[in-house]
Every structure is written in structure tokens, then in C-alpha cells.
Image (cartoon, rainbow, N blue to C red; front, side):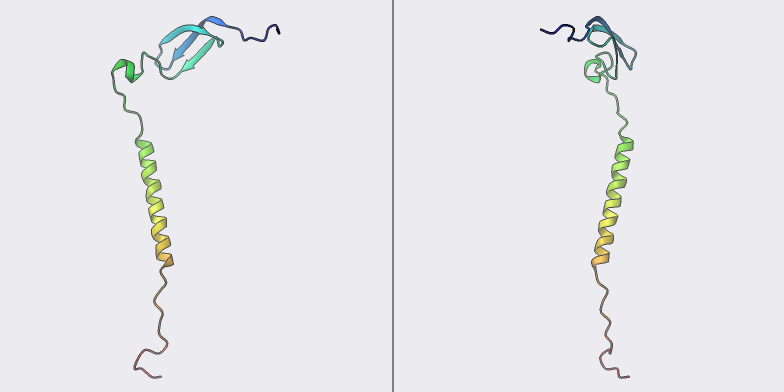
Amino acid sequence: MKKDIHPKYYSDAKITCACGHVIHAGSTVKEMQIEICSACHPFYTGKKKMADITGRVDRFKKLAEKTAQKKTAKKEKKIKPAVKEKNPAGKKK
């Protein structure tokens, strides 16, 4: 068996959450940064957090509006103008 092929194991690794909560656990990485932990996750805390989805919704609505405009423009482009008669009925030159 080869020697020294396994990563170094840190039995007291420091995991820091964005909320400031610090967890000590075993890992091959000495320090880690995470976004959500059990101290701030809505499932564990019972508190609801509104995600900032308004920007995404607005962007989706704008995209849908542009697509609808393109479709109507294509339909208008496909409609051919009425053919003009060279000699309308009953009129002579």
C-alpha cells in the first residue's frame, strides 16, 4: 500500500456560517465558509425569510413581454398588404 496518499484530517475544523454561527467538526479542510446552517435555516428556526425574488420575477416578466412583442411583430410581418387593382372596376383611363 502507498504511504502518504490520504489527505490530512483535522479533528477540530472550524466551519463559519454567514450568520456568524461557528461549528467545530472533523474535516479534511481546516476552515470553511457556509451560507446557511441549522442556526439560521428557516426549517430549523421556524421563521420564514422572504427571498429576494422580485428582481427575478421582474426580469422574467420583461423577457416574456419582449417575446410576445416579437411574436406579434412576426405575425404582422407575415400578413401581406392588400393587392391594389391596376384598373378599378368601371374606371377607364
